[in-house]
Image (cartoon, rainbow, N blue to C red; front, side, top):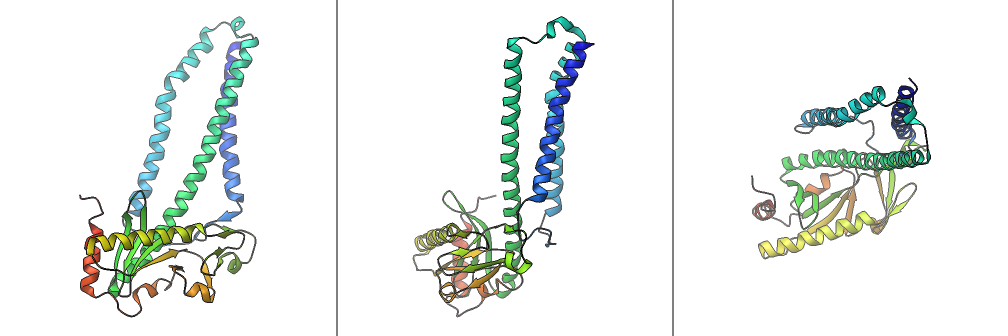
Length: 294
């Protein structure tokens, strides 16, 4: 009886610690100080969105079922040991604490990995939503004569969106930036752009601007190699859910920062025509070959 109680206590402690860890992460998630500006908004559906949701739910179910299969033999071995191992063999000695320390280290390692991948999952979820929202807004420009492409494969990176408009080719990088809590709704959604720096409510960033600029330069070079002509390429940075305050320097900067919400992306289809429809078609064909053949 004593052996059974000890083994049950060990299993119960492990289960309790696991449940407590998940509960604390859920509590932390609800109290997190930064949220995506798209959090809680109803956005339109993209093709296959319900299938993606069903695929994710099925994947979660497969993970639980896989864990059950993986743990079936150890659990049954534990049940067998609870019945077979005599109580006198379970007296703690010096070696016992080595196993206890090992169990605690393994649990801590697992908890660290769980939190790490949970954060990566949340960041990927925010990024996916931001790219989908931006892509849906950019797709409306097709009706105005633009060619819109998404997730263009490059050299060890992808360009989120390409818009081939009458004025230029736009290499659009989308960023999901979480906003802080606790201020007025307008204040926390506002970012200032002076042409070199993005000033959010509680931090300053230049990395996204530099990334968008590098991608535009790469695209310009590749189009010149493919077509043998200079193609006007403009670097653009989309910040869905944010209001952009541009200074005079920001309005004429090399990197265009905009919000795709509402009519924020309409300028991509405006301006003096520098690319004739035939040229736009050639540019689209030159870029289309970078996608994998089906």
